[in-house]
Length: 441
Image 1 (spheres, rainbow, N blue to C red):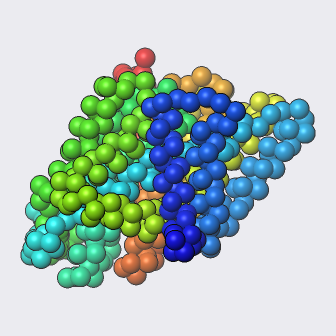
Image 2: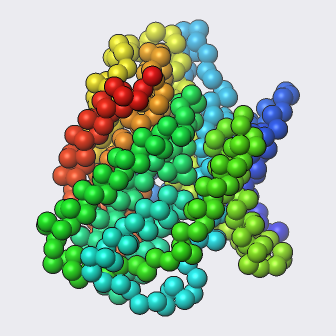
Image 3: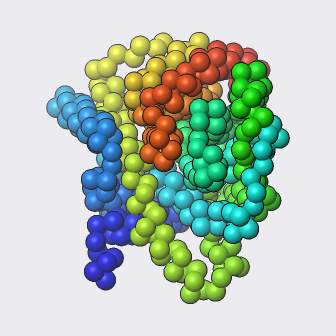
C-alpha cells in the first residue's frame, strides 16, 4: 500500500482512472451535478502535478509560460464580462490523453519475442527499406516506442550515425500525417470534431508515402556508401500483426458504436486488444500483474504529453474567451489553401524555435473556427505541421530521446532535417491546394 501511495505509482493510478472514466463516459453518457469528465480531468491535473518534477527543465518553463498566459487571458476576458469554458479547462483534453495512455499499453504485446532479439541484423539497401517500412507501420501504433526499439538494437551493433538517425526520425515523424493512433491525430480530432477520420487518413497516406520516397531517393543519391553498409532491423510478421489486429478492432467497434467519439473507440480498442493478447499468452494472474506493473511504472512516463496537452487546453480556453469578447483581432479573413499554407509555415517556424505544434494548434484553432473552415482541410494542415514541425524542432520529443539514448545533439539532428522540411513544405503547400480543388466539398 505504501508503494502505491508514493508519487509516481499514485500518478499512474490517477492516469488510469482518467482513462477508464473517459472511456465509460464515451460509451455511456452520464449527466449530473458532478460531470464525469470533470472527474477524469481532475485526475489528469492531479497526476500532472505529481509528475511535474520529472519533466525536463525546458518543458517546465514552456508549460509554466503557457499556463500563465492562459490564466491571464481568461481572467482579463472575465473582467470584461466574458466567460471561461470550464469544461475545456478541466476535462477538455481527457479524450486526447486517454488515447495516448491507452495506446501505451500496446507496448506490452508489440515488443518482439526473444528469437527476434537474437536474430542476425540484415545489412544493405534491402535492410534499409525493410527497416524504414517496419518503422512506419509499427510506430503508427506504439509511437515513440518503435524507433527506440529498432534504434536500440541497431545501436548495439553499430553506433547510430547521422544517416541512420535522420532517416529514422524523418520516417517516424511522417507517421503523424496519417496514423489514427498518433498523438497528432488525437489533437486534431479533439479540436476539430467535424473532421472525418477516414478522409484525413486517405489524404495523409499519399503525403507520407511521398516523404518516404524522398528519404529513400536522398539515401541513394547522397549516402550510397552508408546505404550499402546500413545495419537494419529484422522485421517479422509478429511485429506487424498487432497493428493490423488493432485497426480491425477499431473498425468493428466503430461500426457497433457509430456515435462514440473516435478517440474513445481507439483508446478502448487498444486496451481490449492488449488484454485479450495477454490472456492468450498468459494466465489471468500474470496478465493482471503485467497490467498493474505498467500502470504504476509505464503510465507515469507520459508526463511530458500530459503536462503539455493540459496546458494547451488552458491556453486555448483563454484565447477563445478573448476572441469571444472581440479583444483579439483575427488576422485571417477566410480559410482556404493559401491560408493553410501560411498557417503551416508559421507552425514550422514556431517549432524551429521550440514551440510544440500542439501549442500552435490550440492557439490558431479558436481564430480559424470563426471563419467556418472545412474541418478536413484544416485537420490536414495541422497534421502536416506536426509532421514537419517535430522533424525540424530541436525540442521535439523524438530528437530529445535520440540525444539522451544515442548521444546525438537535438539541435544538430533538427538542423540535419531542415533541408528535408523545407522541401517537404513546398510539396505540402501543393498537396493542400490539390486537396482543396479536388477533394474538399
